[in-house]
Length: 212
Image 1: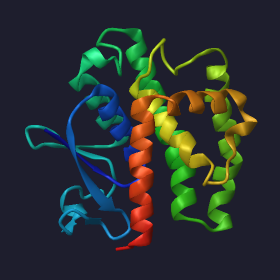
Image 2: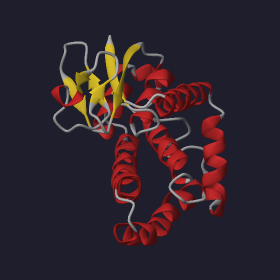
Image 3: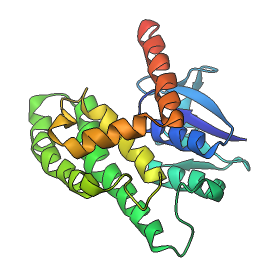
Image 4: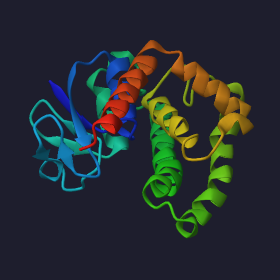
């Protein structure tokens, strides 16, 4: 069975969404990112991954995979009939990879990571200025599309859904981009997405009430 090390509402949410959309069984291990503890057994998370970041996907053979783009693509390929990524040889497969790279680099690392970890005005000035231009790219792309790639939900949508959810608490109201607001509503209406978010919101509240 696959195992996912995650932290509630961190970027690992996209991996949970992908697993649930694919209908893949997995064991989930809750990680406190600041203390680097695996809360299941109080073990040291950095012994699982020296990077100290989620997601970490433990494969059936015991190997460990990190980085959202790689984890999401693995999940998609673990159950190709779920259609979470186009099959090898389909040009749209590279469009999925393109969006995974863009979301990871331009939204996650360029804005969300600085906001939640380095919250002084000086360090946030450039990310704040840049994010408005960055979001105009998926906003324009989604003006006449239901999904990021092709005509069905892919792991790229799982990744963007997570990023859009975190923008509001990071001080960015996506209502200024109607296409993004409508897209997020569509994604949240999907049963697997809705259930994944509900699970992690509840866990986050529990962690806030009982901090490590």
